[in-house]
Image (cartoon, helix red, strand yellow):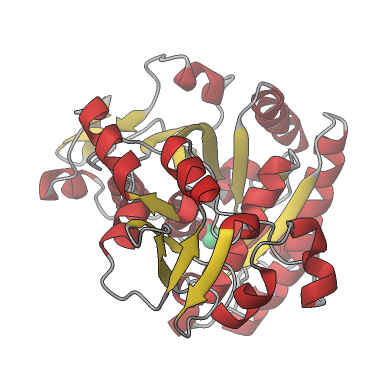
Length: 378
Ligand code: GLU
């Protein structure tokens, strides 16, 4: 089974876990929480934090008890997001970790170029050992472009970066059986999200956050279908992340649903909407076939077709065999100028920095390699 990257983790923390009853950020909790994340990052994990809390923290700062309109909540988010990042920055700095802020709306995942830009940025941040902190861009988010809740956002981000594990940290211990109106036993493992599982969520929606159990289960569905393990656990549990990673029985664990190929690569590989192709030399051919390498300009001898950055293209060797398909970072016209050239020289040619790869290996579906992987894995 091909899963998401085991070292890459997405951690979503909810408003009720971060703030006290008055909506003020709980500094003691945050100190402990950021320490946990920093430790994971220092031990080689690539960590993305999806943090809620902006609206609630902004409300508290502005003295708003109940938001009366969308624009009031958007204004609160604008105030609160700054406060949130400020404290994260301060706390992570003491742990020797640099953070980055990324604000997204659902529309960013639909527009291919924005989707690719977000992903490329995140990958670059991983390389630089930065912890990206993501939230919905509530200030501009209108009904038709929004994620709605951060559980959904975190699940989408898990797929975007192909993370191996998604944690939903909240103020509940996990999903429970129901006994009438009371909660029964905690459910340890869910290997399939059935209508019965969805029913267990009930209608509970927590105060101050948009999500509830149902949005977490829906998030778990998205993430597990993309190949990630997903956990719902109590964020206040001591050292919860490492303990779960060590296999301790905490929270509810949803197992990955994907088969041997991760869904994005499958989508790329199976796509019939090819917008052009790249011809590569023998060196690039064997680099791609033999190892999990990105496609660089140095190995490209030509571009065929009128594709744009973000399109899916075929990659063929000098014998005319199609060896791979991938999401390309540059247009055909740009590649004509970049082919055969070291990425160091890209800025001179393009007038901007650009990505060093023509196709990043995470966006590359290699036919023969995939066959081998398939045999190995099954
Ligand atoms: N983006 C919202 C905030 O930062 C949280 C959304 C949610 O609770 O799911 O306040």
